[in-house]
Image 1 (cartoon, rainbow, N blue to C red):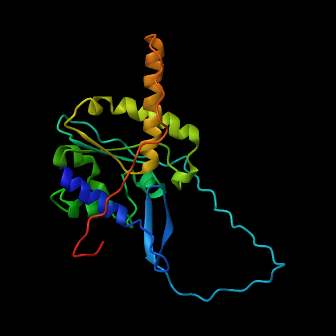
Image 2: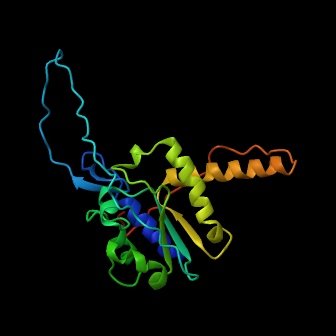
Image 3: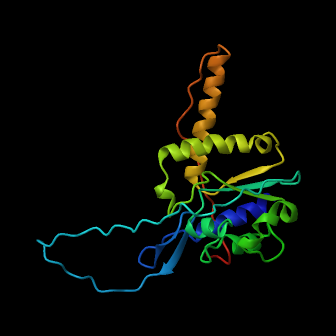
Length: 226
């Protein structure tokens, strides 16, 4: 499981790597989903110095009628839980995790060996039973981008998520995969806060804890190339 998970993290992360002058990340309108596309060489347009640059505002999207995405954590055989940010527009509309067709999530799960057959977002509800994999998000609210989430969204989402994962975190045989650095940091901050409140309630001196924890992503080489 550990080697397969490393392969998945490496391959999923590698799709988001920027190579200077070769590729750029294109916003596809889904908070958990980014796509790398080949950059076309274009001549730079020279504008007069006195001409003011106007920022284009993104059109607001009504998400009041979006159905959202359910958690799939049921079952006693789950041994891996993958946590995303929050549903994007496509995922929230269809009601499935990582539903944007440009996202490589399911393809790379298959290539990593974590799942033994080709799957799509429509198979997400069967993950706990078929592959012993649970799927959930830090925040339930659907937005166009994760950057649209507020600090309060992140804090309250982390509290809810930690309560949701209490059973899994107590089991040393279960792996929890944070699909993003900010998700990990939000949960870590709330976990530390809960420990400090517990220390205060027990009358013990509160231990000072560092703000940051070392976090590394490893890329596996394939045929001498990343």
